[in-house]
Length: 306
Image (cartoon, rainbow, N blue to C red):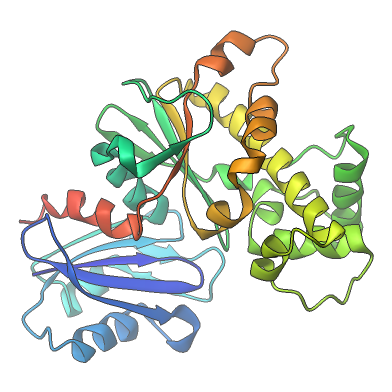
């Protein structure tokens, strides 16, 4: 048996595979309910009576720079070698969480995707982008998956669009630094947009509520502006990666933020390049509809431990 764990900054999702094709024993835990990753994994194994399990594939919301892994948006760190010796003596793979999810792209079917415009993906380079507690991006070239920290690129404080500049100026005033794309294209970014646009700086609305209340003019303004910023970010990333194979979006935020009624304007913003218009028009853009995409990616990676 091989444990598959998709660990974001908020939720920890677990399952087990025996054949690299199917999984079972799905469980979700809150990261902040545990003091260590060892405790979290041990709790899952105990809850599901998996005492014989000794192999693991773990995707983490953190860069993998060496043996010590420190989460970016959660108070959690661990040693890969210690975790392997204590729990996963049969084998352990630790990767960035978007890298884990991107392995699922290797086996996507046409029915797994909702296209925004051009309805086909090619064999060229691709990127997978997932706004959540943070903003993840992984690239694919052939069968090679590359993790990135592209969410931490700064947004220019000289953006000309007035309503977006208002958000950025407030962020700089509040935080004494220029925002990154992750600061704004994330759960915390949604509430920041809404409070600034509405003037209600003490708003208690959750990001989920804001995205669902399109009848509220401030919620709708937040949604439209977030879609503009996300489409612009995807344009930049597609150009950097040469992602003519496809730009893919995943996660619950995208599924609530970007509805079919938004597709035409979103695609227009995505293609808005004065010098590379033809290239941008050729790039497929789609939403991945696979549930538990981290598990699907983990199944692909598990073949290395079978």
